Image (cartoon, rainbow, N blue to C red; front, top):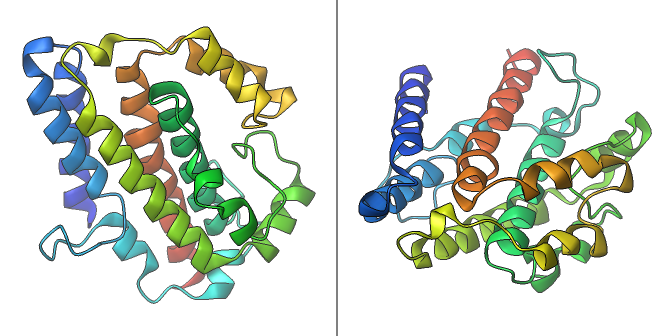
Length: 228
């Protein structure tokens, strides 16, 4: 996904924003979401040879580059592994707790152990020491597998939504799960308040698509800086 492809992606995301809450556009909105979402994740053989943003990021990417922290780039000092993990955690949490009211992939897929890191929250509010520890110790193959598992689950959730459901909001029980399961740090109550005020459409437009896109952009800046 080069600059031109990213520009097209953003234009299509704007198009999705304009139709996602229209009941009569439900089928088109769901299909457009699935297209945009697939372009953010490593190829799995289903996108007919199209090169995705994650494909480009991971190509010839050295482990040292993945783990480097801090890396001073625009609006971030975090490592590539942190950006990949954080965006996957946000998606796992919002899609499975707040939309599907199901078990997080982190737990159902036993990734909490596979990742070899004690951090199970969203990644918001981490100290520099915690980010350094995570960047050094996280199991990279497990991290990439976790990201793929989260993506697959998200697509099944969105594909199963019925017309009108994009306008729905998470219920109080789902919102309470965020704290109960340690998905959000106690210091980050603002994030719970923000997500709790969003409709499913809002969660789809940010955590599941735009948020991923933003963090892939940040990860790519790191790669370009360290692997000139």
